[in-house]
Every structure is written in C-alpha cells, then in structure tokens.
View: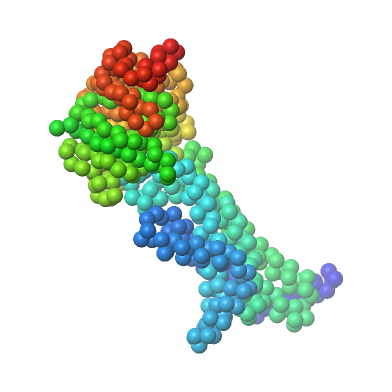
Length: 229
Length: 245
C-alpha cells in the first residue's frame, strides 16, 4: 500500500489537484469561520435576550428559548435539508454554498447561545446586585462586569464546539458543496489511493482546527479576569 | 422634614411576607442601627430601600418626595443618593481596587477618569488602602475587601450609606479595621443605616437603634433606651441574650 501511495503522490499533488484541494479547504474554512463568528454574535444576542426581565420582551424571550431548544436537537444534515427545501419552496435561486452557510449559522447560533448563557449564569448574582445598586444599566452590567468574568467559563466549551463544528461542516458535502470531504470523495472516485486522499484531507482538517484550539487557549489566558493573567 | 420616611412599608419574597408595616423616619446625619435576630428583615429593608426588591405596599419618602419603585427614573434617582455596602462585599472580581472604586463614577456618572481616580485615591487612603490600588479582590483579606467596598460606595458621593452586616463575614481581628472606617464616616455627619450584630459598636455610634423581629419594627429608641431599659419583652430577650455573650 505504501508503494501505491508513493507512486500516486506526484500525480495526486499536481497543480490542478492542489488548487482544487485549496478551494475545498477555503470552503471549509469559510463555512467554519462564518459559522463561528456569526454563530457567536447571534448566540450572544440570544443569550443576552434570554436573561432580560419584564413583560415587554417576553415574546422575544420565548422565541429565543424555542429557537435554541429546537436547533440544538435537529441534526445538522436535517437543518441543511430544511434550509435547502425552504429555498426551493419560495423558488429562490441560490447556491449550495449559501444553503450550507445559512445552516451552519443556524446551528452554531443555537449552541453558542447555550454556552454563553451558561457563562453568564456562572457569574455570582451578587455582582448583578452591586452593579444595579450603582445604577449600571443591563447592558453596562453585562459589558463591564458580567461578560469579562464569564469569558473563562464560556471560552473552553466555545472553542471545543468550534473544533467539532469544523468537522461537522463535512456534512455540507451531502448537498454537493465542494468542501474538504467532498473533494476527498472526488479524488477517491478518480482512483487515487484512499489512504493518500483521506490522509491529506485529515492533515488539512488538522491544520484548520489546531490553530483555532491554540487561539482558544491564548484567548483564555488573555481574558482571564484577575491576576492569573 | 425628615430625610427619609418609611410609612407602612411591606415587602414579600414570592408569597412570603418579609417586611410588614415598617414605619419610621430618619433625619439627616443620623446613624440608624438595625438590630434583631437573623431573618428579621433587616437586610431586606436595605435591599428595598435601594430598589433591589420592590416594596409590596406602603411608601418611602426621600426629602419629602415619594419614591416610585416601579419607575426606572425614580429608582435611578434613589440609587444616586443612597449607596449600599453588602455583607459579602460584592466587589467586581474582574477589576483591581482602583477600577472597582472608579468604574461607576466614570461610566454611570460621567466623571472624567482623572477626577474619579484622584477622588478614589483619596478615599482609599482614608480607608487605609492607598497602597493596594492595583490589587485584585482575590488578593485582599476580607477586611480589606470590605474597606474597598465602602470606598466604592462613597465614591458615588451618596447622601445616605446603607451598611449591610459589613463585619459579619470577617474574622474577629479584621472587624475593627472596618469599624474604624465607619467611625470616620459617622464623624463626617453622613446619614448611615447600619445593620449589625456588633452591639458594643452599635451602642457607641448610633443615634437611633431599631429592633426588628419577623419583619416588624418591635421597638426603636436611643441606644440607652434599647439596651438599658427595653420596653418590649422580645427586645429584652434579644438584648439579654446578646449582652450575655
């Protein structure tokens, strides 16, 4: 088998194949990046909305709860299909990549919302009391007091979710998005040794997720609330 | 006109009544000590005053003006005039001492950082912590944290300071350093609400002592009246027990 890989390697790493792999890598990278960034943003908004009080925002709170609970339970593949058929139903022309992009955002938002909520809840209630007694508004309390203390609880699960998430984007290959796993299948179908093809894909996935995990560790240290900094 | 007047004040935690028909008034510069067994509603009363627990009925008047605790602007006004110091200090764990004391003046009151810091340093010097400006709360002893909390409350230049069992969480040898700071405040003529079990201190500094039990004011009077000749049997029991120890 090793000989087979060595023989096929020059052909496999031809200019056009490498270009194709890089394009696929870029697609996986983009799906992950947009999913993580928008997911964090929207997830944060949902978590913050869920912690509000007062009847005026009640409908919004109910919506966030329904959304988070629903999308954390629906498999990613089903979400992909849902978004795909939703576009079909309204007869909107769109690329598979956009469908995948929207799906990753929907899923990431739901998961991150729960991670952020956990982080916010972990901060002792007396911190809210102290801020309220000094006339901080809800958003000021979050910004200056709660979120800086919640980072250390939110970041580890958030980044382990991001790493899992990069791998989950492979499911987008099921609807024909050309990302890493899809590229692997294409090369395997072309007759390249599977060990070579998927070995390469494995390395590329690793190269995507390892720096992310390192970045997570760096952020944890950087945002540590007190003298552990 | 009294500075603060409570009339038939009631408050509940859910269905449970924690304050029932509390009425008394406070003049400017008075030091009011609230004493009584645990669960009598002393701390709750302070929480109601700063709007952390909405009153269920009755009224609170500040300088003759009734406070509407359902109205955000009214609550903001109260909180800008009264500052509370909590039993567990509640310092912001993500900030050093100086930031803890200056954050509200800068972000809430819109003071310039330079002014806020200059005043904060002055206050921290007064409470004996001028050398700990950049320490984080978890690097300080309980007594030091409580003194920072007092400085933080004073940084907002309140008219009334509410001290909620500020020495209860402290080791005995740290109690005095906090009490010394309160003596300084008292000497300044600030109106102070003092919830405490430090009876000797209560007796020394208070202008009025209010004995509470089961959410009611049982008896109030000068320290001499409450400690030497209590009129109610519950007050006698409580004072008797406390003074025996």
